[in-house]
Length: 202
Ligand SMILES: CC(C)(COP(=O)(O)OP(=O)(O)OC[C@H]1O[C@@H](n2cnc3c(N)ncnc32)[C@H](O)[C@@H]1OP(=O)(O)O)[C@@H](O)C(=O)NCCC(=O)NCCS
Image (cartoon, rainbow, N blue to C red; front, side, top):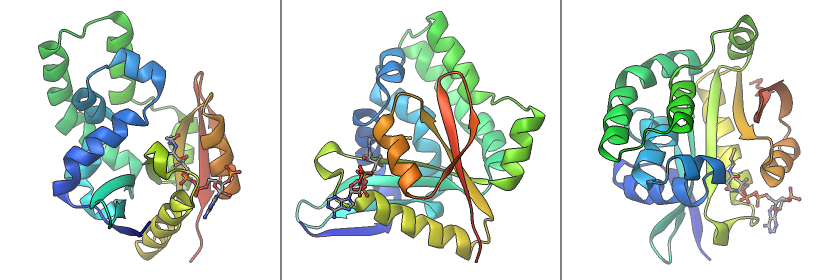
């Protein structure tokens, strides 16, 4: 296998939609069963507006993108921008697909309006960057996750980001073990998810 880590390009959008849905959380996929809608929540903002803060795993043999790490340097700014740019598209797509269950509306509201509690503000100050990482099943457990994390950490340091965090579903045991092994610490808990973070020094 000849694999390289490279910068994300806009033309990778379709491959990322597939990866995002294939590797997505089962509960969330049941709530939003359309891959395009699903990726509007968790992937396409970064492809379109954070292209320079994202990297992909590329298989030179098949010429396919098989994994990604998506990030923002400043979560507070990103969340406001996400609301402005993505919320109208998400609402429109949900309408088109007739997705209107109470569960889907509550999850959509939560994703678009993260709580502005003091506790959250404090950890966003300490860990301003955040990331999403996903690798196709055939390419997992071969060290590519670590390579993506190393690439992003170097990028964060170059951009003077002082810390980063990520959110993982409480039942994603392999994901949690991967983050702990990579040196991230549990910094906050929600009802169904955990937040891990890491501070960065130059
Ligand atoms: C979680 C995830 C990103 C980790 O990426 P990965 O490429 O599988 O991770 P790595 O291969 O770098 O490390 C995973 C394991 O393989 C081991 N490993 C590292 N390099 C290896 C190599 N060259 N050969 C074999 N094993 C290796 C690591 O020690 C690690 O062991 P562990 O499972 O005991 O912790 C990936 O598995 C994934 O996308 N999972 C599904 C989606 C997901 O859960 N995303 C996160 C949502 S928050």
